[in-house]
Image 1 (tube, one colour):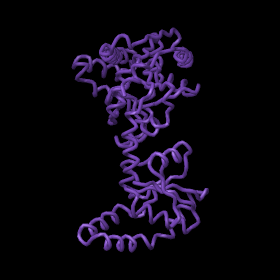
Image 2 (cartoon, helix red, strand yellow):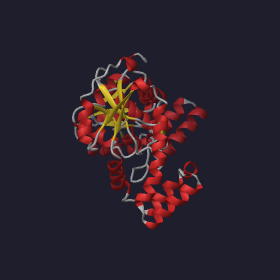
Image 3 (cartoon, rainbow, N blue to C red):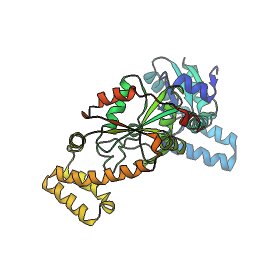
Image 4 (cartoon, rainbow, N blue to C red):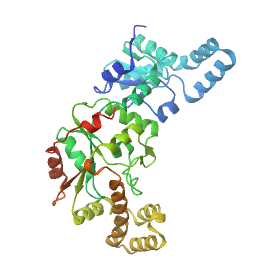
Length: 351
């Protein structure tokens, strides 16, 4: 087999920025747990087959396990090739398995015989994971966008990205907007390992000399937890606090959450019931039942505003910069933020 082999960083730099055809040769369950972003699963051994081969390896040794593996996968060689031919028209593919061993080697050999040009990841997915975890300690010029609920922070990030700024949309990667209502209308959340893979894949590609805009987040975004170095970077970097009129905030929240049913909003409200207190919770739920969205919103917003103010008060005052916007227009605010000039000494000296 004449497959090329690359170390983790070279593999990453070749594949990820170019959206190169990438194959994960591991089992379905391994892939579903976490994988290199953009990879397509083409398992050499299925979940059950992998389990069977693993048992033989422990009981009879490597040679017996290899023979069993070929016995199981051999009848599927033609279907594996057919699947690859159908999915990858370029015939130039990159392959990895768990440690860069038998499974990726077999798939690489098979596709090479079928006329594909193959590149393997030395060390497999494990080496990619090490690269991702190490990336979180790389120095980055982080700028954090803050603002009370309904300030349009996600939309501001989108406008900044459209204008060519570097943006890390953590809520987009987590499929969750961070609050008790954050899962409404969202796709299922990735595993925490996959969440880290998604963050690290962007973190590695960022230009270290240019600023990166990130929304102010708690350590947990739904069921996803931020890597500690990234969270600390958010906490210790300059916070640009966007001040938007309350009327604009309420209108944005109505447009965003008013589309959900009373039942969905009620269930989400109950998640903050202990913080609201029995009386306020009862009032909030009653307002929802009555269709009084404004009164419900006043109660919920008062809670989140207090929570936000508490979090901001924990920051060093000299690292908080306030930006006022009478319009509340995300595009106008994004243009305001682009004009801000800061020294990045604080974040650069962290690592």
